[in-house]
Amino acid sequence: MNLKQLAAEKAVEYVKDGMRIGLGTGSTAYWAIKKLGERVKEGLSVQAVATSKASEKLALEQGIPLIPFDRIDGLDLTIDGADELDRGLHLIKGGGGALLREKIVAYHSKELIIIADESKLVDKLGSFPLPVEIVPFANEWTMASLQEMGAKPMLRTEDEHIYVTDNGNYIADCRFGVIENPKELHQTLLALPGVVDNGLFLGLAARAVIGHSDGTVTVIEP
Ligand SMILES: O=C[C@H](O)[C@H](O)[C@H](O)COP(=O)(O)O
Image (cartoon, helix red, strand yellow):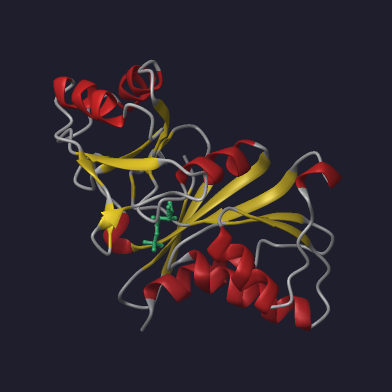
């Protein structure tokens, strides 16, 4: 059983006719976009924006109408994955490098639904390295500052090259250990010059739909 698919397809049930939808990124959001495409083919009317070039391509392949940002002033619902979440719906996102666009889209959505398999649900965040998006300029100094913060940062690579986000930036994957105070860490990171944003999503998710290995789906609401 594909737990990501299970959660994603359940979450797509929250999409109603006429809604403006944010499309997440990653291997779980993939299933939501596929399911939404099926519903559009059956006659559901939606307008959507994508959080990455990959999701934009997939949405177009599925026949989901995409709308430019200057044509709408916000979204009704965004469905997106996460790398880790706790029961208070604090999230780590950005494993796929899309955190900045995802956070902008989530912020401008009336509701963010997170979809995940049960392995992503943790008591406290921090096992998954926190992705921090940094500008390429003087990235060596930004990396050094992250190191001084105790982040043990690793510059993300892909095929032996530095990974570049859709926004032309780099990702530093940071190991802070257990994150006892996500809000404080979020603020500290944002205050560091060279840091564009980080993968902590706090106070953004309204609910999470979790797929379990026994075939059930649970919904967490904070
Ligand atoms: O940058 C990527 C996103 O934040 C993803 O939603 C996150 O990494 C989870 O991805 P997946 O569903 O592939 O585990």
